[in-house]
Image (cartoon, rainbow, N blue to C red; front, side, top):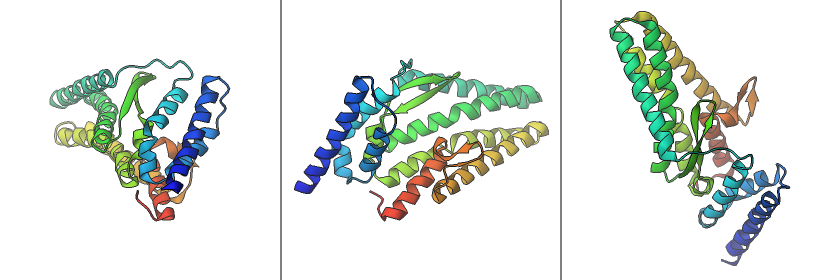
Length: 241
């Protein structure tokens, strides 16, 4: 018990030190990464007890540049509307034999379904979300990072793998609906499905191998890449906690 209390106190002190540097506007990248690495190796009860502190500091880091945000519900509504519009356009294009309309709708659906699936999976696995923000024209979702780190590793792996489902599923749906109606849309959608599946498999393999980047593909930027890194770390530490 004393050892666990000591570990928790040490980690909390390091978290608060980073927070103090952020509040004083003198934080430089590096210390938070080391704190997170130590947290990942801590027992789950300690991670859970520090969840609110981790989320608070992560939020401050993410908002340092004055990033504009929106409620998660509003962003999900935007994505859901986009999915409905894209799906309707794709279906209408298939029925009207319009490749342009079908492929445009399919592209919208491919973009919109992925975050909806991942946010839903995250909530089911106990990963919270704090807000959304725009990156280009698309909403992105900020995790409640403490809730993520406090989850068992198996849940974190499933969470990231869920991020690889939505886009290929949307492309597959368009390909199946277009089959026999407009062959060009079906062929392009099938090709998109296989390209995305290949990228996901490659990212997972890179993460498992501990390779951070190949050309423009950065492992940490992909859900499967992070899942692979989590699995690699689980093998190395022989724990799924």
